[in-house]
Length: 479
Image (cartoon, rainbow, N blue to C red; front, top):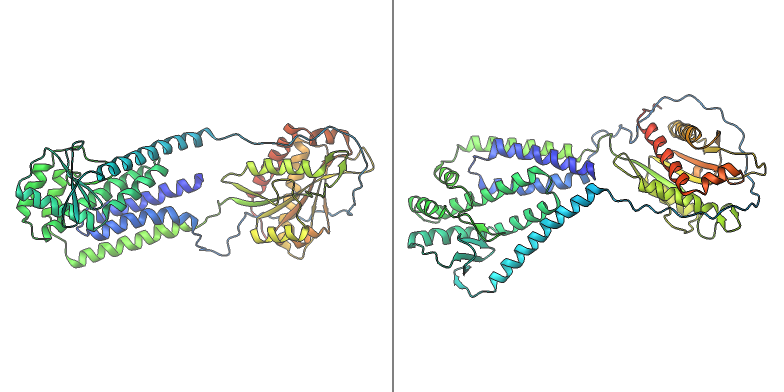
C-alpha cells in the first residue's frame, strides 16, 4: 500500500508538471479538462496494471550457489507424550499511522456528505426555470454558482441586465458540460488521497479550467467581450459560495480577464504542444505501470495438515495447531517487501492435490510448507528442511539456498541444530515454484516442545523465518 501511495505521488506530480509547463496557458480548454481528469484516473489505476517490459527479468533476485551435499531421507516416527495445551495466536495490532489516515479521511468524507446534504436542502426550495436552469435564491451565499442544472443566486443581489445575461450564459455552460461531475469526483478523491499535494493542485487547476471554458463559451454565444469582462469585475469581489458548486466568481479576476482576451496560438504550435503532452504522459503511464524488481516477494505458506488430519498428535495437542499459529503470524508480517498467502487460515482440511493446484495457480516466488517433527529418540532436536531434487537447476538452486538460510537463521536464534535434505514428498514434487518443507523442531524433544507450544516463541520463530526470506531476496541467483 505504501508503494502504491508513492507511485501516485510521483506519477501525479510528473503529469501535473507536464500540464503546468505545456498546457496551463493554452486556450485548449476542452483538451485540458480531459487531460487533467484522465491523468488523475490513469495515474491512480496505472500501478495496478502490469506492463512487462523485460520478460527476462526474474521475479525474485538470484545468487550463485554451490551444490549442497544431500543426505539420506529419514522418515520420522511419533511417540505419545503429554505436554501443555497450545494457545492460538491472535494479531490485532493496528498501525497508528493508518488510524490517523482513516481519521483524516473520515473528516473529509463527513464534510463532503454534509455539503451534499446542504445542497440537497437548497434544491428543495422554490425555483424559477430559465431555459435548462432552475434558479433558486439563497441567503447563505453571496456568489452566483451552479450545481448540475440548479443555479443559486444571492437573494438580495440585484443584477443589471448585462450582468444577468453573462451570468446565465456562464452557468449554462457549467450545466451543459457537467462540470459538477468533475467536482464530485475530485472531492471523493481528496477524501482518499488527501495526503497527496498534487491532488490539491489538480483540484485548483480543474476548477480554474472550468471557469476558463465557461468564459470562452459564453463569449462565443454572442455576449460582447467588454460587457462580459465588466461582469467578471463587478461580481468577482465575492468570496463565499455554496460548497461543491461551480461559481461564477471562483477564479481570481486577473487570470480570467487575461485568459479571456488572450488570442489562440497557431495551429502548428498547439498541435506540437498537444503531441508533446500525449507522448510525455504516455511515458509516465508506462513507467507507473511497470512493476520493477522491488515488487513484493510472493510467498505461499502451507500450514501442514488441518481439519480431521491432526498430523502428529499427543492427547489433545496437535501439530496442525502449532503450524497454523506460526502461519497466521507470518501472514500478519506481510509488507511491501514480502506478501504472504496461506493455504489455510483456520482449522480446515485440504487434500494435497487441492493445495498443489492452489499454489500453482498463485505462481509464487517461494512455497514454505510448515510441519513439526518427531522421533523415537527423545534427544533428537532441531530443524530440518527438505527440498525436491527436480530437473530444473534454477528451481533446485533457489529451494536449496532458501533451505540453507532458513535453517541457519533458526539455529542461530531458536534451535540447537539443523539439517538440509532432499525429499520425494508429493507436495514438493507437484509444485512448479521453489519450495521448502520446514520441520520446525521435534515435539518429542522437551526443549523443542517448550518453544513450539509457547505463543511468544511461535512469534519469534515466524519473525526468524521472515528475516531469512528477506535475506535471500536481497541476493541474486544465477542459473
